[in-house]
Image 1 (tube, one colour):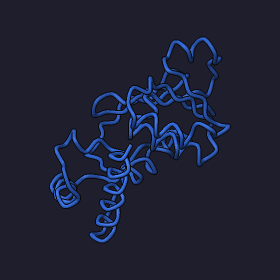
Image 2 (cartoon, helix red, strand yellow):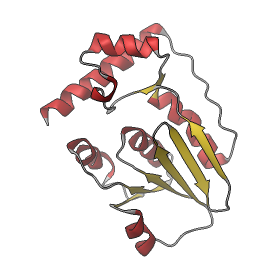
Image 3 (cartoon, rainbow, N blue to C red):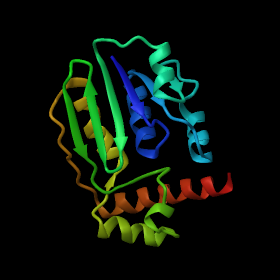
Length: 172
C-alpha cells in the first residue's frame, strides 16, 4: 500500500504521515516546506525508509509510478479529500482539532489556559484520536467514524503537550 499525503508537513498531514509510517505503510509526502515549522517536522520523518518527500506533485508524478493500491490524502481547508486509485473518493469534514504542532496564532491563542478554553468551547478533538479513526478507513477500507471520548485530565495533559511544542517552535 502507498499513501500520498499532501501537504505532509501541515500539522494534520504530519500526524497522518507519522501514524501511517508507524503502521508500516509507505508514505509519499508532498510539501513545499515554506516555513520553519515544516522544515523542523521534516527532521522527524525524513530518515524513515518508508517515506519519500517531494516539493511538488509534478515532482512525484515524474519519479513515482502510480500503483493500483495508492491512496491520496489531501488536506483542503477544513476537509480531508481521500482518493483511491480505483476511482473511489470521499470528503471528510474536519472537526475542530487540536494537537502538537498546530498553528496557535491562527486561532488567536496566546497561552496555555486560553488553549484549554478554546478546546473546551469548541469541543475540539485531539489530532491523535482523529488520525487513529482515519487510519483504519485508509488502510482497511472500513467506514470512517469519529469515536472520541476525552476525559478532563486527558485534555489537560494534551493541552500541556501542545503548549510545550509551541514553546519549542518559538525558540527556532
